[in-house]
Image: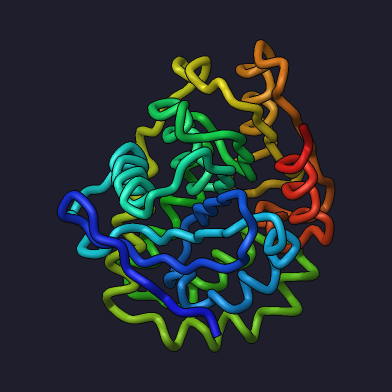
Length: 267
């Protein structure tokens, strides 16, 4: 069983867990979730077992005691505090969805910290169209509609067949969502609004792999394609687009983790 630990730095505390015992350091920043991914530590470590031999992997949550407003830039700043407090350097960084926004912000502001970067189903700026799903989730959370939130979240993230297969799971999971879970979700989801880092992407100097999905119903495939256009100057930029796996391809595509591993291990 994976132990959940807490790191405290610069006045903030953040939960995390680690697995693997390799000489390289990998940091994973998950996307927005209704409940903390710390509850899924064992399944995440099993899913990313391919990294365990060559990497020591750290999965970081968002900070505890969230302020009433909390932007992506602030999430990135606090994550860097935690990374440095843990003594991590030359990190192989993977961020998914909102976690990808945090990850690219870290790579922009702290290029010496990041050795390689993988961005999954994410965007360098959030458009009004991309806010549609987010605004609906916020409204459901504000209304206390736990089941509606979980069902819409699942429907938007996963392909139809995966959603239907897991519909009962989403309904059951919604029964355990607390008022504090909803409060945190609203703050974190709202923090995505106004994110725009496109103009400074050239500050990212490390090799980058962007992984997108053509049927992304949350951010749209254009978000990943625009990343490719914006970073085509980087000779070490790589792009891969999935078909048929939904926004959460990082959970559904069977070769996703191997794709990350191969990119990280490539000279």
